[in-house]
Image (tube, rainbow, N blue to C red):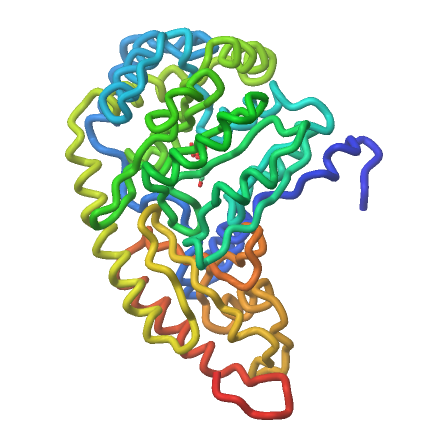
Length: 411
Ligand code: PLP
């Protein structure tokens, strides 16, 4: 049923596919199905105890009133120090803003800057929310497919081709959810060189997974490699992933003050300042001991290797080992155009996802939601036991699919 009360612009967006997949997995778990949930988009451990203590102290000390829209001075100073310490970026306090999670910051940045018909370049695979946020803001997403042969990274040639007179933003997600790709400094410099020729294009660099990089991979902030573009780059980050604080809802950004002011004005009419207690917790996270960050990275390195080795045992289920994030993004095309043991057609990655959930009790997200059909996103932000069990169940379920064509081929 469509309700007359709902604005037509609401038809431009849908609920986030990854959140929907997670919700369905939780529903089935609550109903007693032994679901192995590999949709998880957050670290599975609790927030560090010093963070929780700081929040408690803030509440007890009466830090309970409306905070400034842009964020408390203490948090903005902690963010400035973080950008300088970890990314070599110097921002004035007026160039930093705090939001209700990175998603909130991205929403307000795009809503505050996109006029109807403005184009936003989004390399695919992309994080599910970018497209909907751009559409809701009146912008037009220009999706640029990035191929596995380029490690799912945007090339300078593809960027050049996508830029037009109405291009307002390029959204660069580095490390990338869902592919796990991480750009090298040289690759970022080449993209920056293209952008230098197009002064009307801004860059939104979403670096929320910056601390989840593996092996010899190093994360480099876009602005660090593109100093000439500093005045038209918004660097977005947050504490959700780095400090296991997804429930506290703190994201932030650094960028030129006219843009920060516009976001601030819009937030002043939407959500107001972010929860004062969460801000105190985020100060403790950013300024306190950082060993919790390296500890979780070590843990995730082991889980990543475990998941890659398990998935590698499945025939024709190719995946590039991710250099960053906590996702693996295998190509599942060899298992499409098949029939399940119950006689259901498995035509798309969406069908395959439903099949794995219903018959193998494993929840993953389909690649089409990320603009990259023919893939599945597996999260390794879970225990070793669940990784092993989930991968084993997927292997068994895929092994039961039969090719749809009459000629029998071994998958
Ligand atoms: N950007 C990317 C690429 C993400 O994957 C996510 C969350 O999954 C976010 C931003 C939003 O993070 P936050 O919890 O800070 O809103």
